[in-house]
Image (cartoon, rainbow, N blue to C red; front, side, top):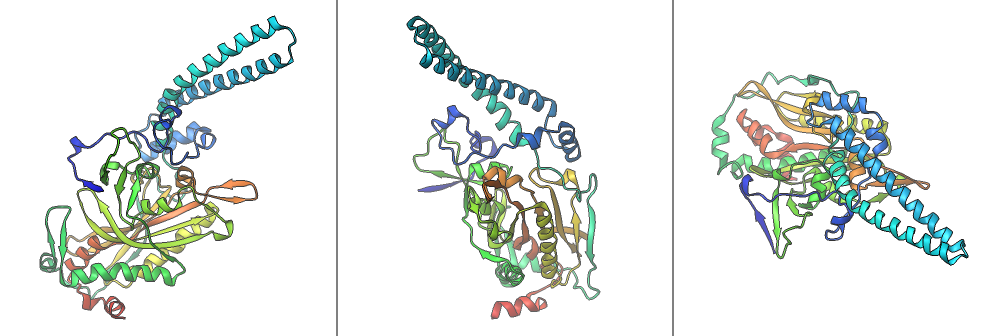
Length: 425
């Protein structure tokens, strides 16, 4: 039996890493996967890394990371030296014909074995400090298109001159709130909540995307892989769950990136299947926020060039959907300090709100390079060479935010003729 936990932050359970388990923990915990640790790419140029951290204003101590990396390499080097020594001693024991010499060599081999065992036990702490607490916290590389300091508008559709007047009454009458995590919709709000995700998904399907269905639950290792805070998700407690279990169950909803990652974890696809273009409509659950019907897109490509092309094509489909709303909107290229750690670049879709005379974010699309693929072991092969697909993904629409904005600007279901026709087909 599963139980949904909604606990105050002060009482929430402390989490250990589920994404990377050292050898000592793997004896007691099941390791779902081993992420690909690309030390050469991430740590080959510390000046580039420091620039990335500086532009993002990301809280990572690069000097400490470098010290941990040197210590980790030193321990791994010593382990290899002892292992090589044991191999050489074993060969000499087999080749020797002198019993006294064999006895002496065996004693040395026993000492080498004990030294290696002790060093391995010590290396677990070193690996945990370096990989779990430092290396896996390194953010993605920044794309050349990402502004360094300030976000910039790359496209704008002006508000139609015949736009409706603001109507806060519509929101109050059709969307009743019971705290921050619970809302009840009636009338046009309920119909929009149903039809907007359907029409958004259909827009992508007509443009070559495949309709997809995802699970509502994910394990802790996926939450860590996407560098998402576990405190932003509901924790699902399972019966007879050990107190020291690290790979717990979380409720995220099928309309989210996490649910897509659950499908592609440890998946090997044929190169001919790429690029992938998928769209899923489902719930998305947030801790201390109302659940929402959302449409989420997911794409995977062989190369960065193909992925950026898919990114631009997907943005054009976003435009097709938002062009049908009688509201102005703009597309903003997000600056480095505002990116999430796993994002290389992102654009936000912001609708114009006549009530506040400001722009409100309602959707987003991100490019993640092969960063996530390496963390979840999502691969494809060309010959005997293993590669990691580049991922493009984002929320095309969130019904709660969109419905509030549409109703608040005096737009009813009758004003959305495409929705009205689509819902009755």
